[in-house]
Image 1 (cartoon, rainbow, N blue to C red):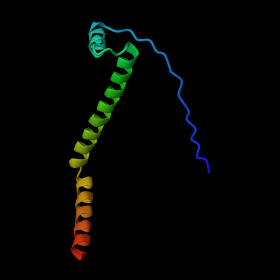
Image 2 (cartoon, rainbow, N blue to C red; image 1 turned 90 degrees about the vertical axis):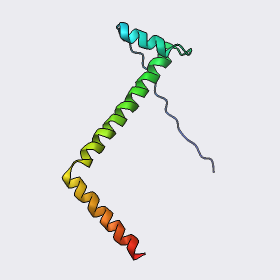
Image 3 (cartoon, one colour; image 1 turned 30 degrees about the vertical axis):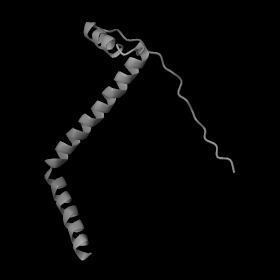
Length: 88
């Protein structure tokens, strides 16, 4: 039997952006290793989105760590697994 995968590629989307002096300097810095403008901008967007996800996860963790209901639920889960471990 032949296994076939269908790959759907997303068409490239061109955008335009106006850079202020700070953004222009940042782009030039990102391009110093030989990256094209497009590659540098794509990488910066991906890096920024990953950073935002990590920040959001840290905010969520801090919120959960200080929420009394979540703390009670965590204590109940720990107690349950301790009892299961004790049973062998």
